[in-house]
Image 1 (cartoon, rainbow, N blue to C red):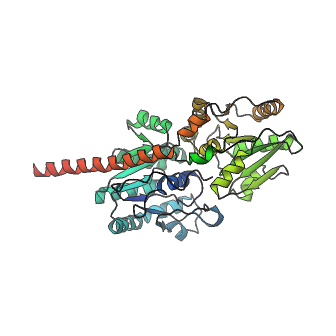
Image 2: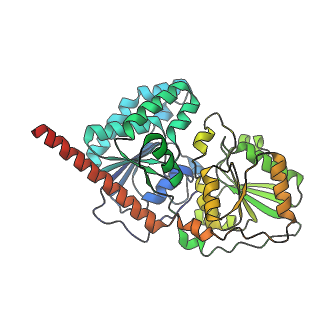
Image 3: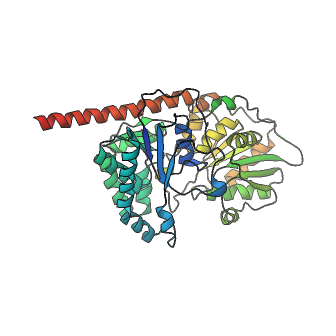
Length: 422
């Protein structure tokens, strides 16, 4: 779900360049990359930011507190509605229409006069057009990598993999690469020789200090397990396991905060009397409700899914990591031990870890947890984990990276002028 503060106590200095955010993701969506962007950009002064994105968020899926900067939504996908998302025909048509997107970007740059571009390094059409816009106009670009792009593209097919390799060979050495976590930065250093800067999530830590998790319940309702976020292909199998455990264990009940559709809930076995489905667009209220759970569940699949391989999932740090740390309730991280999410909780000693995927293993862990009189100390490093998302530090890093990108571009332009004069 949503992951961060709507405001910052430290406004950015006036010399911060204007920022045109060029990205597929709509900042009014309440989770994932949109929530990361919204938390990062909301505190910037009026007139400093404009966003161009796809129009992909509707109705109740929007977050309660709307994004405060101008957003220009590109509605190409709506024109292609006869073709399902992800189909080859729709993808081909989108690329055929790429010149229209590029012209629109040139128009927005002419109107807004940005000093820097920012794009989430995820969707190839938006990555490549941001590269072309930067080359055509001389405006520097920052690529913000939330999850590895090329690994996921290669998994989807040989053609997409070749396209991703071609795009990366040009873009990664053109703009400034910024990674969401140390683990993703480590990947790019090893595979591409890129020294990516690290810019973690931004979160409102002032509320976290007020969270007081409730003691374990032993009454008729049983202990409450919570899950918050979208149910994707990369966690459906483990959510199905959890639903089976809850169905067979009368001492448990499960509460799920998600925008998932009925068909997905049914496929995961989540339509059960002891499983409650909710959706909460108010971030603070969501954290308050999560803090009242006896256990929070954070699953990442052990297997490739049709759209996402484990090679990419290994480096993901979901936005629910932030929400769970802020809520303060015990967290069970269910994924392979070499995943970035597991490494994060293990490094900070901020949660329980389960690295075996079988239903029997989850059932055994839950039974042991239920039978214990007292939960062992799980949160000795919770303060350290929360500090990773410190807003004042991370907003300062963001300003430094934007200025660094602009300075690098100025040096490159000066070198070009010197070569011309020679």
